[in-house]
Length: 467
Image (tube, rainbow, N blue to C red; front, side, top):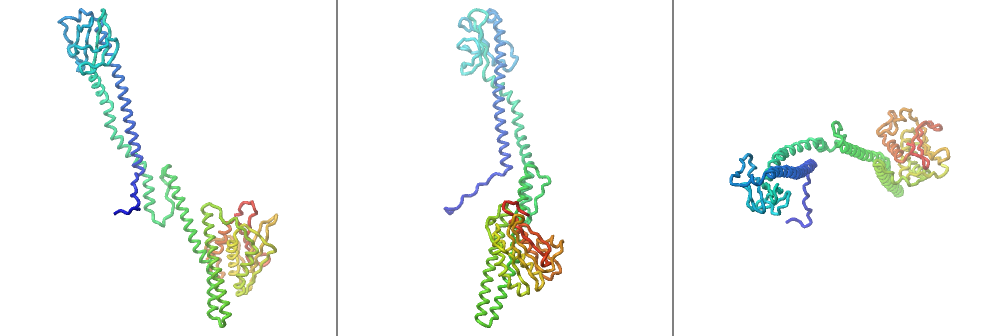
């Protein structure tokens, strides 16, 4: 038995070609019927006018004759000259008596009211069209009539000649319409076949060559959809690469603390290493949340919406202090020093998590590509009348030539000869955050330390984005 909550079967919908063909054929048949009705009415009217004129002409000929010339036994019917002649009857009445009639005329009056003019009557079960007119002599009335059947027969003969050809041409016209509709819908069907034949991973745009103007918006919309899918897939790949890049450092720190805990000789040393391990796990979890937030904000930006967290405020100095404290141990292991120059709090309209991601990548690059004993300085400047709020990271390393600085931010770009491993994703994350929040990135040579200097500037309130 069929389950009670089973959904009813979906009705098979008509194809667009079938709908168009059915609509056009229905309109064709309706117009043909309307034309037939109008032709019937117009032909009937004109035929009645013509035959009524013939009745009037015949009556006029009889009226000109004297009654004595028409009466008598020698009055014979005229010879048969036409097949419809027998359907025309003549009566001449004098003082209420039928004195002359044609052989096919009934004995009863064709027009009972004896009023002059045209009338339609029924005599002996047969309908007649009668013209009544008075004669030349007193109390003489002439009736000239024609059977309605004869008129209908003539009407059908005329309509068969007029509408018969149209009726025979209707199937040919329907066949032509079907051929035209089928040919017109062929480009749309070709687009459907092209889309159905594509591989799931094929996201290249459909060709627009030879596409009709009516179908072009559909193809362009499909190409835009493919483009958005490419962007989404690229965003997912970026997120995967960024996550691997960002999690590398905290995972390495957690591993190091775990090794310290394994080799600890005292309980206090082991507890300290385990506490550092838990702290590293918390840092990694927080980093994952930041990456997810970055991916979500980037998705909002790609779909045309403003970042939902753009209105969040953070303090550059507080973020820099916390991050430098977290990275101080790694710098000391390389004999490097971290400096912070910040006189006051510097509020900026960017979430603290995003500022931390941006600054951590800048610091990571500065520490990684600076030699042992190098100095890395972070300078935070508040907004002034002549300059916006800014964040600078400079080092005493070898720096970068101008051509290499121009390529910073390209994914997987690395400066050769540094002896450091990496994929360039750190700079890619920095550049993407700058685009997302309308920041400007400037690179150059540090005047004090001699190495690379990277400056991030926030736009003033009400100013357009700097990038």
